[in-house]
Image (cartoon, rainbow, N blue to C red; front, side, top):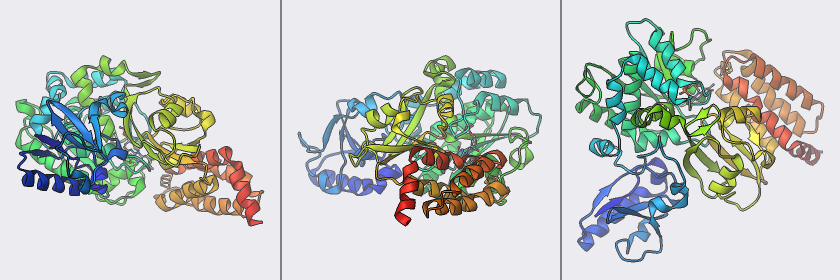
Length: 506
Ligand SMILES: Cc1cc2nc3c(=O)[nH]c(=O)nc-3n(C[C@H](O)[C@H](O)[C@H](O)COP(=O)(O)O)c2cc1C
Ligand code: SF4
């Protein structure tokens, strides 16, 4: 009998290890022969730890489990039984392309990976020229999932066209946005997919070395990725001869120290080189002068982990999903005050309202939604009157926001928007790399100005708006440049929170 208990950090934080131990002890005591597999998470966080038992080829779910719930797990009826896992609407209604194997396979079992479509993309890419590989990615319409939404094929083409003895693939696994966990889930749940994507990127642009810059706050992901790289080397998925071909690619995992700004690509490259994580001015683009001054592809985990499925199923298959210039699928990360939080991969185009109220089931508190922050700490707050906005790069830009890494954090009506605006400025002040004045000084002044507003000084409102304009226009990178988004949207969405705080102070 196959029993699955996730090894994912979220499931472990909710007690998955104790549940796994209890299952093993019970199986031994009752004389059941079981194979316990530590899979990735299916992404339904409210059901974690989610145990699955395979019966006649169908995986039946039980959750959320505790060690005490394990008694009777192998009997006919169990109070936590959920039926076939893949029939649960949250999972059944998704379009899982990038996440097709997460939660399904044993993350470190390479044959299991291959049995579920793994390596088909790399095998196909090995039969193509670099230019054909880059053209396939361009054709797919894939855009960067790290935040800026830059077309991946165009970036790769620049690196392909650059002349250099050595080029690099750098995977940005810093995942600093609040409420995001898609990168972590892929690395913990399907690490070979990221390795395969990086290898395809390498043979596409002519880079033989790669690095994953992984945040130190992700110890589970670091452990799984290191093991996966070791297995990949031992089995010829990495090394001097990729899958027995004449193409070489090798990679290693580097651990960052957890500064938000080290997720910005040039700051990341400095940190990777052992320098202080300060943003570099562009140009030169990293694609031309990146790691150690060499042409470098810097891509987010999800961008790179989406490459194998594009090569497995074809660019046209991927491009057929989506809306406008946002092609394919997006792994939404629904978090905050929400009933059904977790990872939901779907084609671009679902409205924000459908995501929050339909998929997410509304707030966990049962109170009305007041605001939703989309795109991490630099993303704008959206109110329910904007819930008809379809999820897409241009659509969110047009509505005064950004999709960023597709993190969605829900707040109910108890949220005080003046405190959230203050937090945005404070976050920027703490995380600023210090290179440019509008961000380094502006964020500190921003905190002070918001404090003045809530203390009753109405003349400080236009001052705050002016300061935001300066930060937007004058900052070197998006940390200072986008902090005004949450601040101004909070002010627009709930001016009464700023006034009420003023009145309370008076
Ligand atoms: C302050 C700041 C933090 C960022 N943090 C991340 C991050 O944690 N992960 C990420 O992939 N991109 C992050 N980015 C975006 C990167 O600079 C870059 O655009 C991205 O890694 C490119 O990969 P993509 O094209 O695949 O999205 C950040 C940008 C800024 C300005
Ligand atoms: S905007 Fe802030 S983080 Fe970005 S370069 Fe300027 S000081 Fe550094």
